[in-house]
Amino acid sequence: MRESSARSQTAESVAACRASHFLHAERPLVFEDPYAIELLGQEWRERSLADVGEIWQHPTTCVILGRSRYTEDQLEAAVRLGVDQYVILGAGLDTFALRRPDLMETISVYEVDTPATQEWKRDSLAKLVDELPAALEFIPTDLEHETIAESLARSSFRSDRLSFFSWLGSTVYLSREGVFRTLKSIAAASAPGSEIFFDYCVSDEFITEQEDVAVAHVVYEYTSQVGEPHTAFLNPHTLPNEVGAVGFEVIENISPKQMDERYFIGRSDGLRVATYCYYIHLRNSGKVGHQQS
Image (cartoon, rainbow, N blue to C red):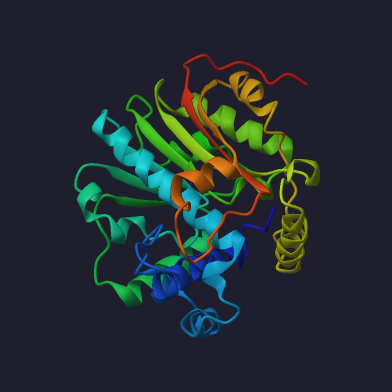
């Protein structure tokens, strides 16, 4: 896991993927983020504007687009059912608070990330907008030294109200034990019926497209080079039972093929999601157990 004193380098590359899709991809877009380009440093901004390497067509970009689209589709559905708190774990350069003023009128948003990444992001936002939404709250957190429950307790977050958690592109930076420890903390900190959606990487044996093995290893090499190595690989077959032991029931356990079918089928630009990532949508069952070894 990266040091809390260092800002996330992968957060910027993820924002560049969203920016490139917005600037260059076929309409309709899978996910619209007009603000991402504005938060990029010079190098990534120039690469996105020039579409160097056709970033928007990369299978990893489609992982980013699919998981973001699914999150906000499901968040909207949850809000209609009474959810009024949205917690973004490992928020990076997420721009939800700027893009969705419609939802910001009815929900409170809590961004959780390392102090260094949040300081960098807030400096970038200050150059972009005069005032941030009043319903947005930043919670600087060092997960090496505190739990999500402890972090949320330092904010206005209310554990007795329904919440929706997103945890995108971040589980891979924890140990396997750290992933389940975090899930158990979320279950303890949130009201029964609250939901969480996250993506997770799988080992080579579960990657269904041979070319994606190479894609995955290029990604892993890059993240290691920038000090954010992938360390947690989960099993999509056993995960549903494992999350049950820490207080969750499964709403959907989504394969890459299912994500493709939901958002990418029928496009003429050839976009497809890389098959080294899977996705899972959970509900707090109100029965926090103990992970089985």
